[in-house]
Image (cartoon, rainbow, N blue to C red; front, side, top):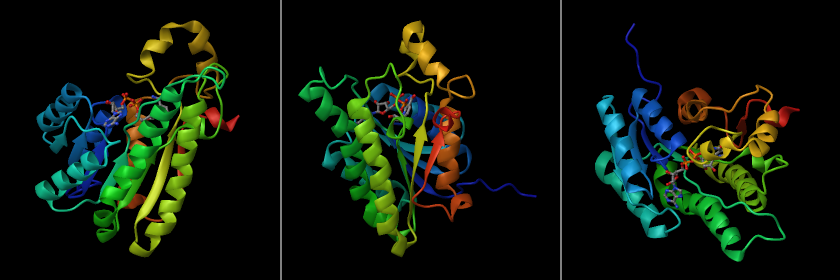
Length: 255
Ligand SMILES: NC(=O)c1ccc[n+]([C@@H]2O[C@H](COP(=O)([O-])OP(=O)(O)OC[C@H]3O[C@@H](n4cnc5c(N)ncnc54)[C@H](O)[C@@H]3O)[C@@H](O)[C@H]2O)c1
């Protein structure tokens, strides 16, 4: 029997492809036959991912530097997808950056940068790609977090939890607004995943012991485990799933 990729021929825009989960998703989606349109604010990391995907035999173009908080950059990313491949089937909003501080010390800058770089960039990217996604009955996958649903004793996630909670509710509303076009919108809420952002913190037991203690499966997640969920939501296998949030958290929010 001839094997057909789970995303064969689909044009998939993935943001933050220089980072841990974005790179894992680019490789996994390309392996399943997708044409990847990546981007990152970090030029070297983004170019490394393109090289990895192409070395593995996949198809990928990428825009870097690309700052998704800037409307024109989001529009340029959409234009790159259209000029290269002609359409967009999937938008996986993975890129984000957060600043952590509690209510009594958080600065204006930490608050507004987090809202800008975790929430505003999702809104801008969806708005830029919406006309194309609605034409193709596309799939939007937004990255939220368990911080949208729960708290960690040692994580001052005030701005982060506000932004990611908004990503969940914005996604539900997008599902409603996209339904007439056959467009689906879902979010993924990762728990603690071993990535460039979390790895340096692990060396501190005062932080890592309570964080790891929250995880039912007793270990951090891997970027590939989040990418696999995004792949499912990008594929037609999830054709009756919209307005949902899938927690990829090793049971963190289940006890
Ligand atoms: N790592 C975790 O434990 C964890 C947990 C919950 C949610 N998440 C979410 O998962 C997603 C991926 O995070 P990761 O852990 O792979 O982090 P990462 O830092 O490895 O990757 C994020 C990438 O996004 C890029 N980026 C950030 N802001 C950008 C912007 N304005 N424009 C363009 N690119 C930008 C960064 O340069 C980076 O390459 C994020 O949305 C994050 O909030 C991560």
